[in-house]
Image (cartoon, rainbow, N blue to C red):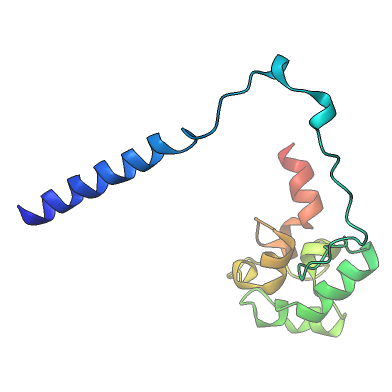
Length: 138
């Protein structure tokens, strides 16, 4: 019962504080504003610098380099030695494999490329690139 009384008291005090805000200030209607009293606000002399990095979109070449550097296709159950011999990989960007035909499992959902590029499909090695799959959905 004491906790409930404390909560009610806190709510009343909070409400009183909100109601009291601005009571000392007269309400000014827009037509009552004297434009001679307006103060011009100066622009800052220098631009504001933040620590937040500005995202610059990757070029197609940078995307392909990222895909090939972070590709985990060789760890996939569907991967076959012939794909390695042909230097294949990065199917989400390059398209379907010339030699992989059996879908024996897919590691695409765990690939860092999937997260970085916002991909939502899998089995790129047999079904085509992310761009092809996106176009097929449209």
